[in-house]
Figure 1 (cartoon, rainbow, N blue to C red):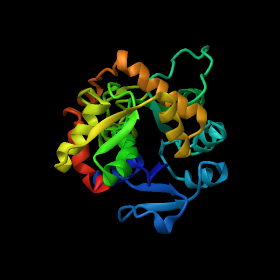
Figure 2: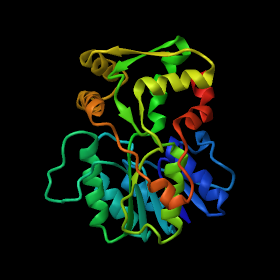
Figure 3: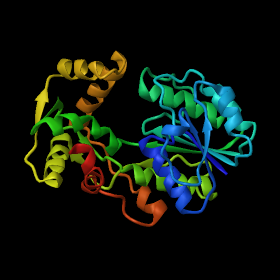
Length: 282
């Protein structure tokens, strides 16, 4: 039995689906079981990562945990990891590329900071662990969906920021391997897609798949930060994302071979990801 957190999100849902396709018993931690819409045969456990008691109940009888941390700080993470450790023997965590291996490095503010804190909690827990250090996720470009539905222009900062975006199904495939075999115990693979595209190229790809001409209109950094804040992101996260995109103009994200090395097949391209999500952009 494997417990999947974030089971109704992009990656977590794919983990659930792929585990069930492999014949593995799955329990999903969900806030609202009636709204979960997960595959048949999945056991639903009502709970929330902000409630370590509910996590402890959900992990009873479980062999391994797939952990996604959807919160903007690491508050409560040690309690969740400790709760998991009372029953499970293994934890697979969806982290982020750039987390330092050196524990003497002070966690920086923002996204990498909370991933750093959680990774350290996991590595110090006594559990078997795998840390999936993903680069940019293709699913994050769904943030453009409303603009795509409303017209032929996508606005954002740094059109030439270059990313090697990964399909959530490929992250899930690595997670399933880590949860169900011993091949990745103690590993922290860097996961990316098989190609690096600028943000302008990503937008053009969306247009190509939809059969439309869609262009990227570049905003200034202050405008882009304000747009992220209007979507509900904390100011430090908004500034961090825009600054990171700026850095990717001169230092593009690299392409990692890890997906193909681990799964034995090439990773899915961004065009394939868009084709899988046409309904989200239409």
